Length: 153
Image (cartoon, rainbow, N blue to C red):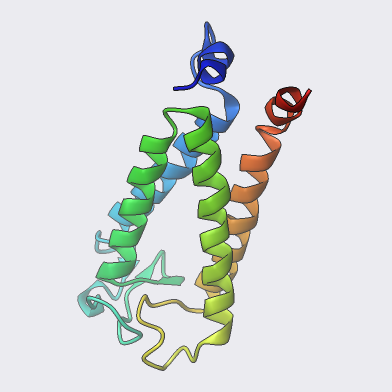
């Protein structure tokens, strides 16, 4: 933890960017767990390791696989761990958001029935990835904006 991290959190616990990273990480962790629960994940008996052949649908909407669920779990653990510092939380939100925007573009570009759809993703996943990416970057930037401006003076 840097000196500026200690100054900003003294007496207040976590900063808003840390709280946001922690919340996003917790949601990803929860989604990863829910992806393995029959009923919450429809067509659970068709949950595949990876690939577009997996017909399992989280909440009946988002196509998932074992690989997809594990990625959510790992992304959630990373968010919770990186929320311990301001810079870690900001980096998680900004770079994680960038990863999700790349996934959005990837999902728009690939053939959903082809081998390139190894995660797998469907159209609902694509647009969720866009919203997640944009929101995460916005949180990371906006919640540290005053800190960045102050640091430049």
